[in-house]
Amino acid sequence: MLIGLEIKNFAIIGDLKIELSSGLTCITGETGAGKSLILDSLELVLARRKARVGELRSQCELVAVFDLINLSEARSWLEDRGMLDKDDSVRAIVRRYWHSDRVYNSINGHTCTQGNIRELGWLLLQIYGQHQYYQLTDIKQHLRWLDSFAGHEQQLQQVHACYLEWQGLQTQKTCLLERQQSSLAEMDFLDFKLQELSSVNISKEYISELQQRQRTGAYHEQLMQILGDVDQLLGGERGLVDQLAKIKSELCKWHHEPNVCADVLELLDLASIQIDEAAQRISGSLRDESQQDWEIYKRTEDELAEIYGLARKYRVDPEQLMEYRSRLEREKLELEQLQQSISELDRKIVDARKRYDVLAALLSKSRAKHARLLDVQVNRYLRRLGMKQAVFTTKLLDIDADNNDNPGSWGVEKAEFYLTVNAGSDPQPLRLVASGGELSRVNLVLQTVIGFRVSLPTMIFDEVDSGIGGVAAESVAELLHELGRSAQVVCVTHLAQIAARGDWHFCVSKQQGVNSTSVFVRLLSQEERVSEIARMLSGSKLTELTIAHASELLDSKYTSS
Image (cartoon, rainbow, N blue to C red; front, side, top):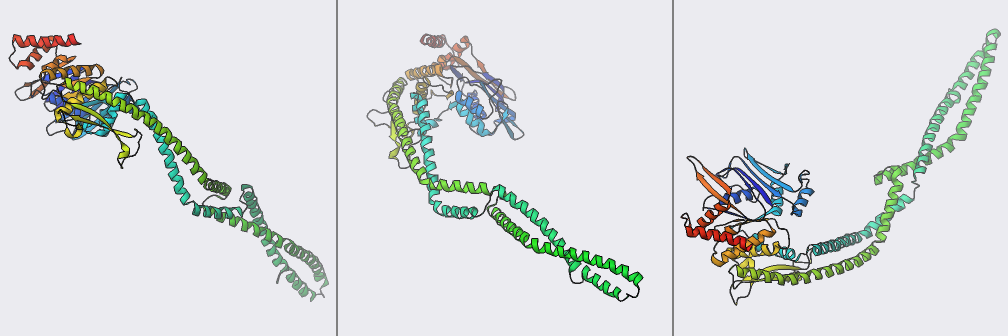
């Protein structure tokens, strides 16, 4: 419900605040007084149109305040986007401010886009201006209105949930069939990978053992290299053994110097014996251990090289090869079970479709029943509005008859409103044959009939009384008043009969200054309402008769209420 509207620096409005309540609010005033500016500001603050040339003055600001108590869908929309005020969860404040060629948008103080405001606005308020009855020309909306009238919310939720389940299973089957088509080549590739990975021990423990062997083998290889170098230094060509032999040979030439050579030769003999023994031991160690250790080390290196090669090939760490192989085995098992899964899905799809068909059939039956009830009520109200020969019909069309349509989350039919206003003529699609005035009245009737059953957003009618008078005008007034009992209704009108039926009556006036023009809106008292309704009846010249007539209209409102 719209409870407040603030307009600053918009067109000829300087600073205007309007507070509204539930029920039927009527807005009247002389032609050109500025009534349309109020609706223009509402359309602009809800981002339903662009600003026209000359509308936006310096620092223009528009604020609309809504009560959300009966608008659960709007509250959910705000909550989902984190825009619901925690301190005041039953209010929505929409603000747009223009400054320096920029516009600043917010909802409950949260910066937002123009699209956010427009989307929320459709949940809060509907404006039905002259020739603005787009929903009546949108056949998708016809089915929504029928379902609202019938109270199908729970049934629609069930059909929607069953449809999503059915379509979800269909999607799964499509994916499995596509996978099955490519599974033959994939299966061959999986077998190759698994064969390659199974030919090698790739357990984490064995890899760790190989790595330890590699480190030990590298140590022994280094040791053998050192011993080999020592063996060459000792017993190799020109090694220490040969050098000692040459030294001893040279000293033997000096055997005639026994005091010097005898002792040295004795020491060299001992050294030769020890060095020769050391050289023999080293050579023996090299002969005994080198070949065996080398073979073990080489096998370890080869195994690790193969494991590391597989890890690089499949882009995993060596320790993850076992896990990778397990994943491939699971994938192979899934491919082998693919046909079984497809068969199981087929069974589930059949069951889901059967459940959908049952629920959709129940919904269709209820729609057919309530379509007849809707037609009866709409036609009764249309006759009250002076459309005596009008015949309104709701037709349900099987979507299977249209090759482009398939059963959907809303059911298996479409609805379209048909109308004829001439006796003897067959009803034709409302969107094709109804005039602007006829659309206006049909819309008012539908909103009234549906409004008795569901919570509707605020409805604003701009001159819904265009082109009617007499008894029809009184009927429109009664209908608007009835609608105001179930929803907030604001009506801009030139008809005294409608103004008299209002629970609240605002008068718009314009005052001309020396260099400026200002628009004022005031809530009328009972006495002021009599004068305003009398003006609407007779113009600027008020007489006792018109005042009496105005009082009578107001009194009749309270009598009928």
